[in-house]
Image (cartoon, rainbow, N blue to C red; front, side, top):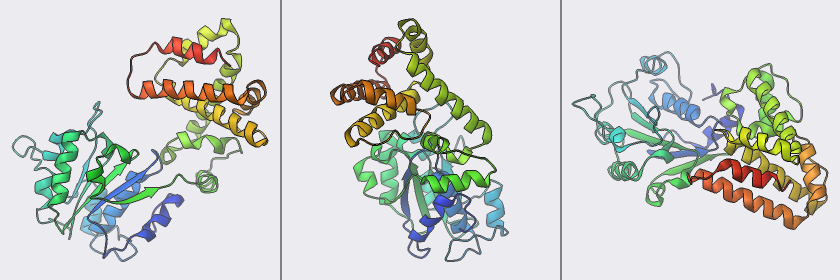
Length: 325
């Protein structure tokens, strides 16, 4: 797999032996680091008629051409349907009469049509509901030596422990700043030291100049709004603006600012270079540790309620939180 374009993924192929590869595997890691891309590259290598022990596919055989065209008969990718938050059991069970989809249990025991193996990939595996997970577990309990089942997840511990126990696992770590910098520079995009600190919330596989420019502007605006929140006149406007679909991201930035302020105060270190340096400096100077930990706890509770879908008046919650700044 020397064709892998993301430098932080290349080292993981060394973990695999083409002759001893587990037939059920979970690939986990943060969103946006290329888990699906890696799994598809691995799948293409396994299906290739001429691949070698280094998982290098030829890109010229009928299997590779079919894979590139998205029509390989021995490869099936399952993901959340449009506008759906879950992977339903019907997507795994299939409906051969209505859609021609025989389902993963039948597919896994069929003879491959073009390659030596069949591969089933379930992306966003944490989105499987309990029914789907139980059905998959049944499939894994009746393994076929010619079939590989790969799961991809950014939240692996959302899966049932019994399901996790059936899977070999590879966890992709978030790339370090050096790897990110090399990758971004190879795209012809220039970065400064501040820019490298905000990639953890971006999809690294979709990075472009416009996205980075937008990211800079959003963080500068957020920092400015946070500084202005001490004004009661502006607080109302800021709270209204924050109450949108990006609230969870903004709360994540706020959490990082608070935690870095705590770190600076405890360790008496310099303020880290970022678009939020002024905010960290302000908090570390105006709040004591007790107040900072209380802020962090309040923010964590709000973030938890949001993630669990608890119906809150977000604007009131935001105003209450920011008023303490």
